[in-house]
Length: 274
Image 1: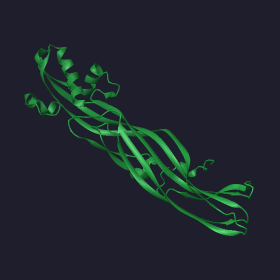
Image 2: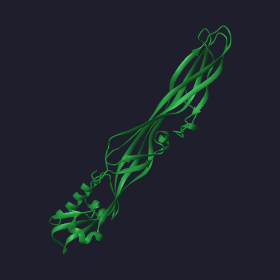
Image 3: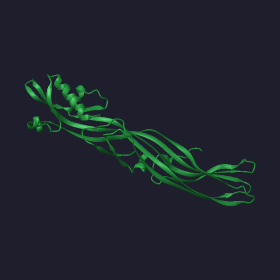
Image 4: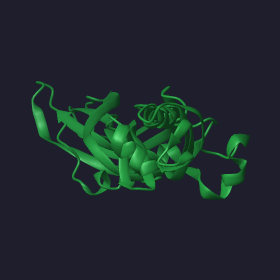
């Protein structure tokens, strides 16, 4: 939305209904109205609402596997591996909110994106271009275990990865009134001072324009956010005898949680089945 252009269109429509006009002003830059600057003016400022999680799911990703044995004697083996996970986060506005200057707003990120964004990030209201950020997390696993005689032991390192999408309302709030100069007197006056809410109520057809009262309007769009990140790591151990038959039930050990608590909810859940 080009907010000032939109308000200008409303004001011109109002003047055209009354014989037309030749001037309007909102920010005290039009000297035609300089004797009346104390009677009108708009204050515009950005704000944002609460976020809503649209969807969220967890995948178990096998990132490394190796085998030990079989040997004709029992032994001890140590599994050791480090995997680098790239956590990604992106965001974009569905529609820009421009009012004559490059305006940014600080937004607190949802908990699901905390590790990637450091809780807070800046968004520009004058672009819909997708912006991205990424971090790398190293997962290190080490585990010593017993390898029975004549058995093969397969060891898998698994990283549980969360993908999520969220949205948040982002708005520019306009309060006050604008000045309009008519070509001829209407009800005895050339100059009129028009509350922004009354103008929007009469002339706006945009679904993102929300009238709060006669002197307050919110111009609102959606901020879309998405991210992928690892939330925990574990080791899965499977044993087979020489005939390839499962020697014992697979077991999962050595759970490690994300150090920055990327997804608080997922860290209290039981790991999904592999």
